[in-house]
Length: 379
Image (tube, rainbow, N blue to C red; front, side, top):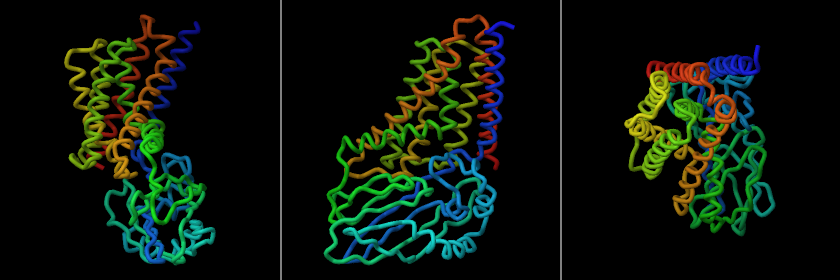
C-alpha cells in the first residue's frame, strides 16, 4: 500500500469519526454562555445583579475552558435541572445561591464585603435543548468614603462579563473563572479606551469560531472543498465576509432582529446547500458568490446574537464591534489554513483529490447540516 493510499484511508476515517462527533454535539452547540453581571454602588449600597445559567452551576459543572456541558460527567444532572419547572428550580436556587456566592470576593478599599441574597428569578421553562436564564441579585454595604473595589470571580464559574452601571465612563470587562478584576473606581472613569476595547473583543470573536462555532466552521469548510485554488476561495470568503459584516453591525445596533428559531435552521440549511452543491460542480459559478452573500447575511445575525450575550460598551461600541469581527475573520482564516495544511498542501493536485477527499467531506458536511436543520426545526 503506497503512502498516499494509506494517507487517504486515514483521512477518510478521520472524516467519518468527525461526522459522528459533530452529530453527537449538534443538540448542544453554543451551550456554554457567559454570566452577565451589573455592578452598582450607590449611597453605601452595593448591588450585583447576575444573569446566568443557574442549572450549570447547580449541577457542579466546571465551566472554565469547556464549550459544551455534554462533555462533563454532570451532564445528566444538568439536563434534569434544565427540565425542572421554573418554580421548583427557583426554590432550589434560593438555597444554592447563599453558599455559592461566598466564592465571589468583592473587596472595597481592601476590605471584603459580605454578600447577601436579595432576590432570584427564573425564566419560564421553554425549549429544554437551550439554556434557560436565571437572575440573581446580591447586595452588600460599603462605607460612604469608599473609592475603589475589586471583584474575584469563582474558579470553575466560566467567564463573567462585568458591567459597572450608574456612573460616567463605567468599567466593562471580562473576568475568567478564578481571576480578579482590575481595581475599579466607584466614581467611574475606568472605561477601556478604543484600542484596548478593540483588542479585548478580538478573542471573543475568534472563540466563537474556534472552538465554539461548529456550524460556522462547517460552512467555511464547505467553501473550501469546492476548490482549493486561491481565486474561487477568495471570491467566496469575500462575499461571505462582506455579508456577515453587514448584518453583524445591523444586529448589534438593534436595527435588525430575527428570532433564533428562524436564523439557526436557515444557517443549518446554508451548510447543507453549499456542501450539496460541491457534489455537482468543482467550479465557481457566477451566482454562487451571490448565494453565499445571502447565506452570509444569516450567519451575521448569528454572530450578532453572541454579541448580545456579551454586550457592547456604549462609548466604545464600534471598536468592540470591529474587534469582534476581526476575531471572527481570524477564526475563519485559521479554519481555512488548517484545512489547507491537512488536505490542500498534500493532495490538491492529485487527480483523485475531488473523488476521494472533497466529495466525501462534502457529503459528511451536508449530512450534519441536514441533521441540524431537522433538529432545530422539529425538536
